[in-house]
Structures are given as structure tokens and as C-alpha cells.
Image (tube, rainbow, N blue to C red):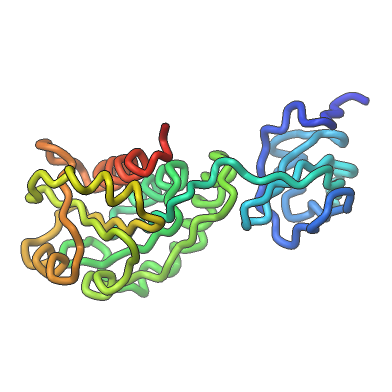
Length: 253
């Protein structure tokens, strides 16, 4: 049958889908993604895609019907997703200008960030939290697409916006904040991250973290970390720091 990919060949399109059946050989309604299947990807009946339940399982699924009115598929198997990191990394990112913050969401998802929390600090451009809420629909779409593309098993969570002091009271496990004034302190950090199940990472805005904010973070148990002698842009610092954490945790080879 033309386009028939049963058996796993060509399974390169992944989709998160609510209400996944728990067992193979069950029919599933693909209507929520039928437009993308038919008009964007131009897949055919018989093609195999991979559906994700958001709980770490993947379901190779064969498209049975595909029309302008909807689509159905047959679940072929249930498999564990290999791309989900063992460590839980929460990125508390001070709000950046639109395209920069969206870039952090996209690339952070690819790197393995489990949760994003927008933070409002003294130097953030967008201050009232209410101004951020209308952006959440777009942000969630960016996270979803990045998670599907990078073959994550769970959708990263997008938390409610917090002010700096509120964010400092959050976070579990090893708590770090990237600061250009931090000294060299990597000797024990690698071991701490390697042995941790959870890491919280706090990164400042375009204008950086103020001395007062850094002092407050220190008092509340956050460890300042340096990203080297060069001053990085905020979005670069966020992804560099996430990469360092994931490398120390053994998640990037």
C-alpha cells in the first residue's frame, strides 16, 4: 500500500495528544491534528506517526482515515520515551523582550528544561504580571512544538509569573543563579548537580541582576555561578547555564 509505514519506518512526526488510549490496537481520534497531518505535512492514510500522552509514553500510530472532516488512527504499540531527562530543571527566567524570551522557551525545551517560570525583577522591561498573561497561549504553542520536535516525553510546564522575591522562595534541590560577579565555585558544583534530582536556575533580564537582588538571593540560599569572563546577553546566559547544568547531570553525553 503506497505510503504504508507500518512497522516503524519513517516515524518522524511526533504529537502530544490528550486522551490517549492506554493499550495498543485501539482506535484514536486524530481530529485535533488532522489539519497539520493533511495540509501541512501532507501525510497519507497508512502513514505512521508517534503520539505522546505527556506522561513519558510514546504510541506509534497508523493513520487509518484522513479527510477535511477529521482523522482516525490505530495505535500500534506503547513505548517509553528515551528523550526525557532524569533531572528536573526549572528555569526561573526574568522576562525578556518578546523574541528573546520565546527563543529561550524554544531552545530551553530542546535542552531538557522541565519547567519555565517568568520572573519580574527590578530591571525587566515588562513589569506588571497582567501584561504577560495574554502571551501564554503563544508561549505554550512554542513549548509544545519544540517538545514534539526534540522528542520529549513530557510537556514542560509554564508557571505563573512571579516577582523576584517571590521566585527566591521557590525552587527545590540545588538552587543556582547566574551572575557575572560570581567567583569561581565549580569544584563542588559538578558533584552537587550530578547527584541532584532537581535543579532550580535563576537568570536575570537584559539589564542584569542588581547587587541588592543578588544579595537577597544569597540570603535565601541561592548559589551564584559564573558563566566565564565574558558578559553574555540574557538569552545566551539562560541557554548556556541550562547547557552547563545538563552536561554536569550527564544529560548531554
